Image 1 (spheres, helix red, strand yellow):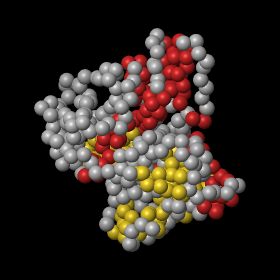
Image 2 (image 1 turned 180 degrees about the vertical axis):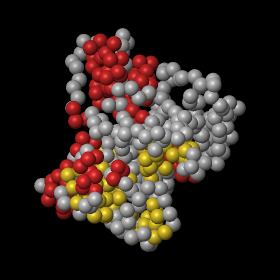
Image 3 (image 1 turned 135 degrees about the vertical axis):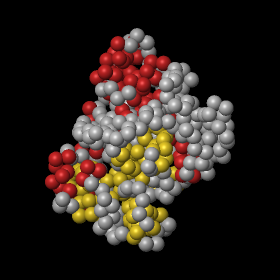
Image 4 (image 1 turned 180 degrees about the horizontal axis):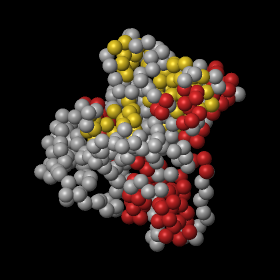
Length: 397
């Protein structure tokens, strides 16, 4: 299965003039070049060699470090940039935890792909970094003046961390930069962990942008470009289908057209389905771990390799245990008592609190609280500018 960056021309919802951008992080030219290298798909070894041979400082602020993490750069690369600057200034070196490396399980083997889609490099929000000139031989971008309203709710918040594109045959979707940098990346696995909340199993993302794609919308593994996310406005603690077998459990992102009806359970392609319906999710879409590792914060290194998953998958029981309590969708999933017994811990239920649309998630808060971001109304759209690009958006090659 080909996992390559989305390729094509971005079709950008027209943002209102002066609309605030989510990530206003100025990167030095050297840091911007590291981002460019990482997003080109080269290995960490090549990026690290570039960093070690650089003659200039990368000058990373704390905000820049967070931004680079949100783009998907590995801890080893960010640490190397910090150590490079520390060496230039004769300061102590930083250290990193080996467990923080991206998952090392290889991506699925590539197969021939028909009609690949053209790359849209994620935008680097900086007034210092050079912007690549558009390909002069490429046809001009194609614009859609009426994208789905769901896109407008999320566009500005997610644009700094990935690429929006109208994918032929499926419509508007977003791909995080992390997919391009780490080809083994997968949703509800890397960059986050499970916590048990008063809305059931809640995916607590480590990414600044994680409040949206892991709690709204649906993910799809596209054979042409890898994992992409399709927006929707219904919130859930985590939109996954569960499987369980003995001492192991697994989960996979629910597919497009899997809709939870508050009054009648799940519908798929418009038809009501039972709690044991598999939604057509194949074994390759599941993340499986031992129950004892279920609450680990580094699931990318705890998940079982494909050969073991295949053996377990055929013996599993499907669990689509979603309910509604106090007008909130609850994802019961794996029985919390089984997880408690396997991990030899008492699992405390955390509280879900609402964050108003547009507000930042509180930092440094209690571990007994997780947050649900309410959606804010999207900004009014204006006509595209004379250049064809809407206000506030930078042309991409």
